[in-house]
Length: 526
Image (cartoon, rainbow, N blue to C red; front, side, top):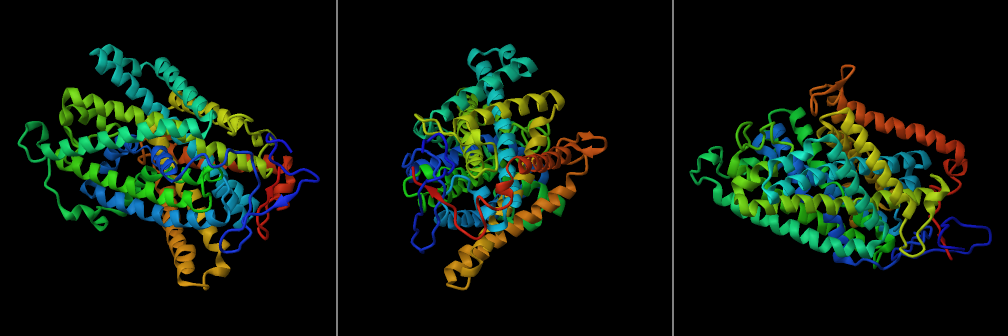
């Protein structure tokens, strides 16, 4: 059997891996390059995919606008369900280290249709965030170019739609090319870019704290630290809390990239889960430190340098770089945002390409996407298709809506809650016969995933209700319905249409004949 076709053929022998608990948790071999990434490399990929500096500049102001000084509390509230769901990923990965992750696991737990929609939720969420990453990277490319050349006209090129879209497509193409060349190339670039991000964030936090209460007129809105900022119950309304929570959940999205590389990771049963937890701790520490420091320096007001100023809230660091760090060091913040978005643009291709690869390998998508490049050991066609899809999506949305970034970010929160919640519930259901076996099994396979899934399901339901109102998100609407609702629900319904089309083309998968609920997945011996 060749590496280019991961599906089992007549006469193939089948083997299973045997995890420590004795469960046959084998998965289909897909030809990916094994043992390409270790613990640290996997954690770095997780942090890079989340893109902490990009997330902060995109949502710090929006979150402050929703919940005011309770922003740090909402960051912690968003971290909690993500942490609980991370335990579900860890337990499922131990017995089924499959690059399809959420798709494969929910098929095993709930059957092919639920699993297919869960996989679609991951794929379309990734396409949305890739488009936003490319947009932010483009904006900061021209901002940085303007700073370096000291030319306002160069910086203003970002306002030209043709220039902006052309630059954006070029960045998407470059990221696609790097991801196409495999995990080794990806890992090498990420160490430098993640290190740069965290170092510049630490410098920003230090300098922001030094500005707080310093008497400078530009920082008239500065605040003294208060432990009350950590109280989520002080948010003025439940609607504001859920809107802020949706943004906070978006800020943590992407850590599961550690799991989608499980078939390429050393110690695939345990290393990806540990890497995910390390990435989560680094992220929550970075967000709390930056959020608190920025709030102390400029406050959460809606004027001047205040974080909630609507004129700057969708790109906070562009407004704060100069005042907080000075004209010289402020350029570093532009570099960090550009590096963050570019790095994440590259690594975010990992989960979408490998999910599509797995869906194809299990006959849930066209067979051509199951092909792996013979040299680079990557899902080449899936990676290129994701790049094309990202470019088309961003171009269309940019031409249609002037508020594409904020509306797609809000819609992204819906997708994230959808597939993370399904994965958490899949863990509880898959391990249901083991929950009374020990206290550890009850907590990590049952209680934590169930609570995390319920929290995310509640946010999904409340967000779905709130986004019908045009005031949700950017305030734009389609026939009187909020554009965020149209984007979010429309993309989920598109998944249903595609699933029906695939069911006609590949009935065996949807009949449960390829990947069943009752039996473990298979590893094909080449």
